[in-house]
Length: 161
Image 1 (cartoon, rainbow, N blue to C red):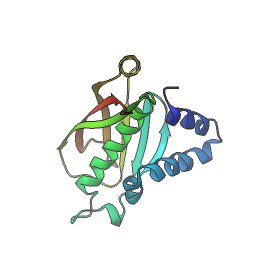
Image 2 (image 1 turned 180 degrees about the vertical axis):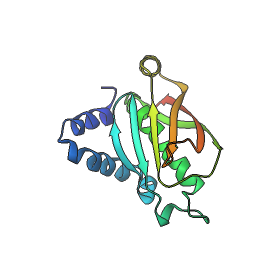
Image 3 (image 1 turned 90 degrees about the vertical axis):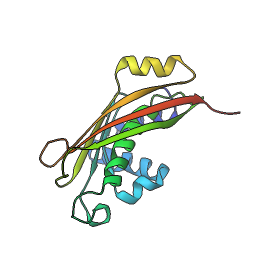
């Protein structure tokens, strides 16, 4: 376990399957208040993968009834931040360094995000007091296609005393 957050997630993942998503979502949205405003739902979380869902509800819609661009960006940032943050040692703080989002086509319905870290990425995070890396995330809509392509660069630095 890299940090306290990872230990909490490991405990939740040992609970009955029907309670996991609810508890993961509650923990995340209590900590990251802005994510709670959009009703992002955490489906599953591990040290190497985070799966999140954003339902196309009125409060996250744009003027044409699709999910707003910023809500989609929040989904991507949340998914990558969770899987990255689980692996950052407690002596360090995770920071989003850059975000690039290309809108390839109109989003259709709800969105799913899958963010992944490799074992090499995790080793890099654990072995240095600071650094940065690109965290992969795939956003798909109800057509199972990728309406947006995202690149999220996350950094970690030692906490100030």
